[in-house]
Image 1 (cartoon, rainbow, N blue to C red):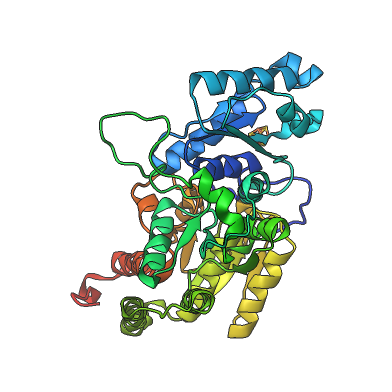
Image 2 (cartoon, rainbow, N blue to C red):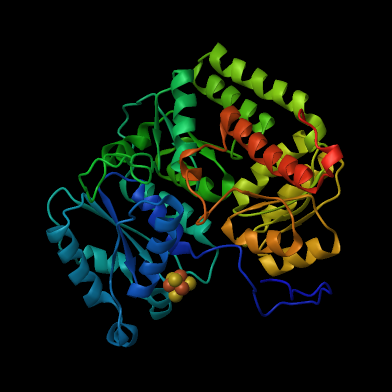
Length: 453
Ligand code: SF4
């Protein structure tokens, strides 16, 4: 399908072809789904919310319940205040959430609807909450929307009461429930008390029981978000998706922020455990040390399959930075690292990792898949890593392809399996190793097929 992508690269500023990101409200919706009994609400037209829910449904294969202000021509001309007030009233009376998390869209931002004023003048039942985040879609990406909604939850709710709770506020970033479960397992193994915000476990990976609940059991409890102001520290995994929440809690309640990369490499995972140990005085347990030893053992056993392989990777900035670190630890060459999210820091961060490892590669923020495809045409790679949209490039260039990131809409189970922590790295190693070895076997002559690889 992409057979006609030209090899010759021309300067291009005014058009994006095959974007490598989605829009802010999608990330805000995902963050809000990670709060218990919270209904995400999109202040815009129905089509926008259809798109966010559709993408989330297809990636997680779960319902993504959300409401919308249902803009039509009238709201577009006169503003969406009446629609939002009606929506708030309807949502509380029909669906009975404990909280509505409102995000804006292109249209409501362009109109200039004043959400704080509309929310203040809306009626809400006793003991219920309304929060909002401004998420203009022509700025940033779904990652900024996720960051804005997570920070909004803290801004609206968190309070310092002077009674320290000894907990860590853990902000996991825009990752799958499978990753969040893995991070929780690590926290439990460390014996550290924590609140995870947001927490989509039990929501976007809820079991099939035969009974439908609009609000599943999972999600961060509102009382824990309020109590986050009494936390010992915030540990934010991924500066792009989680940094804003950590800074917000520092500004509001003076909770010390520790913003680090997503733990997708040995280096960062070690730092994560040592940080937890330093903050809480807890020893790193033998169970986690054993896992670290296992991953090192696997890397040593299989290094010949990875070493020197050229990789192109694209996706969300925190995931790309984490993955770049791991590829370099494996002796692989992250030849092209691209994110669709605009950022001043992304290229600097990736280039610093490449320079430290003495590897030549190219990093790009606000890039698109057309550019990535052209780079690959000019300088072929051995492996492509990214979300579902990468499969067209993989097919056109006949490259082994590993699906990591968001959205993955053409495979299942991925959202239950981690790519973070030592266990997540094992899974990445298996995915990448299998893709490379299957290609090697596919292309081998009969006489070169080995039983043992
Ligand atoms: S880019 Fe704007 S119009 Fe399109 S789905 Fe996102 S919010 Fe709606």
